[in-house]
Length: 346
Image 1 (cartoon, rainbow, N blue to C red):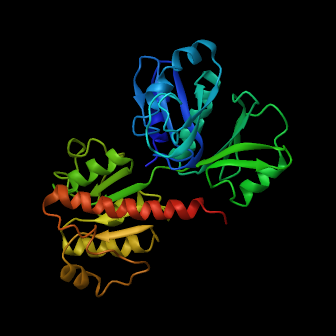
Image 2: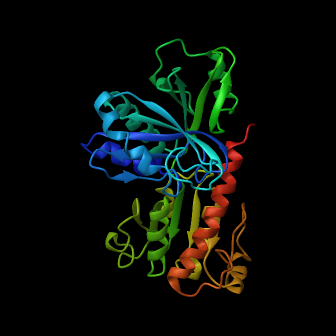
């Protein structure tokens, strides 16, 4: 999942100065693609990765200077070169990577915190950056999917970019030529965290919630049994909902991009949950249990969407941890396909 969520959390909570790094263009093969970000903190710590370790050491050398001057800079790393003097070490990755470093001053921090608030409220946000001839960031503007805007754009904002945003043509990340500006701009769209709703808080739900949160899902756990549905068992979950199926589902404003797993191990409750959740038209709805049990459970339930069962990729998983891995592997696969679809030009 995108590191931007961890980065924004750190920017909001730290008192340290920091530098935001963003890949703006990739030519050929690279470990990460356009839009990938990481954060360098002044104490030397880092959040996120732009490469498999090839670029980070070189970029970190520039952090003290940028924190001192407050100026942004762009760098080009030719990973195609076999010459170890080309930028430091031969990596063999085979691509050219363009990276922009921006000190997070008070103004940028305020805008990044606004970005975080929109993402928390399930709103997509597109970023547009304009560069000066020296590679520094001249202007930037955030455009939300509900047409709000914020950022630092000192000249008139081109109507052409509004038109591109309206037509969904800003969803693909990278450099884009803007005719009215006679120059390229960098565009990238940030999406809310994918959300996984786990219905059933038994012991086998604990590793699923833990692993899902670790890889970047926003996790909701719901159950009617207070002995199971306890924060101490789900420390990384965003929300813990105690209530019967109809009560807990009413507490959630779901979207077509949400994922849900039903795993209460109570036949009647599972049946009720599947019926209620299928009405929400989620991205993914899965039921944990044997194929025969699920077929019997679904036999008399009017369904309005596909139900996945058995859940997870068929890796021969045994035990709660392996089952959690198989489920998340399937969810990641679906998430990536969905993300690619959303990023395609309409």
